[in-house]
Image 1 (cartoon, helix red, strand yellow):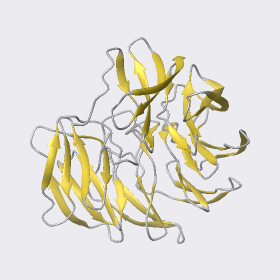
Image 2 (cartoon, one colour; image 1 turned 90 degrees about the horizontal axis):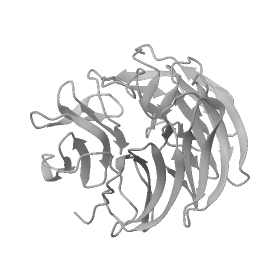
Image 3 (spheres, one colour; image 1 turned 120 degrees about the horizontal axis):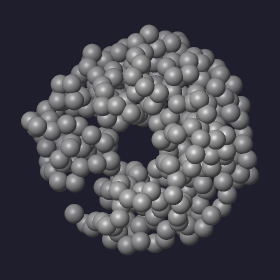
Image 4 (cartoon, one colour; image 1 turned 180 degrees about the horizontal axis):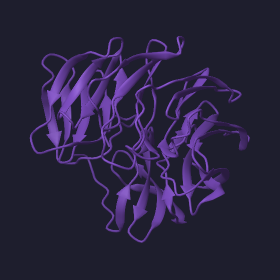
Length: 332
């Protein structure tokens, strides 16, 4: 372990954003206050902090160039601020506003000079903001209306992908709904959506099928959607629980139903290999994939798994939670 940052008043931390030499998180304190903090990634020393005040919720930060975005909510309204800060100094830049009621936000999704936020007073709205001008670009509605919070939309050069109970594909520039791909397996378990659609390698998007994981400890299958054909390619046989990852034609997902990590072929949906979770533990957090190692978390430890050979555990550390790798090779 390189360092830790253990303030006595913290109730929890949001997942991090990172740039070279510095990481960002939101610290929620026991008294309800939320603070954006920037830490030196080499030693954990605090660089700056910015108080968001005593608010209902704050998202994890998202980094776009030299600007940091955090979606926040004091109370239900049509003008909940996403706070924009200077990433180098922590100075306030501006607010952009969107509607929500008692939402737990996923972080905004940055792409080029824009950020995209899944929100809405009754959910089901995607907002696009220009980070240079500080102005709204567009807002658009999903087709099914079953997602209120907990989702970060996925974005590429042409499209934005949003799960509303269907997979909705929006034109990134205009916000026009290009197509809606029906999810025939959708299952209701609550309004939250615990994750984001994942853009695959062959004009496809993989997403959890169902709502409620962001609120309850439930398992949902993954569905692979063909964007050109406007239909699904496959659905997994198992249900999965944590934020998965996709890399080099393989989807990595962890199931508390069968207590296994699965490496799933992106084209066919077949399980290529499995890693069994030690007895008495459950998967939590997220999965991070590199060329040589895969990192995952259980309720008691993080595991580094060899991506080659027999996929054995290379090392463990008793520090479970949500993970990210900074540009200077720190696993936070």
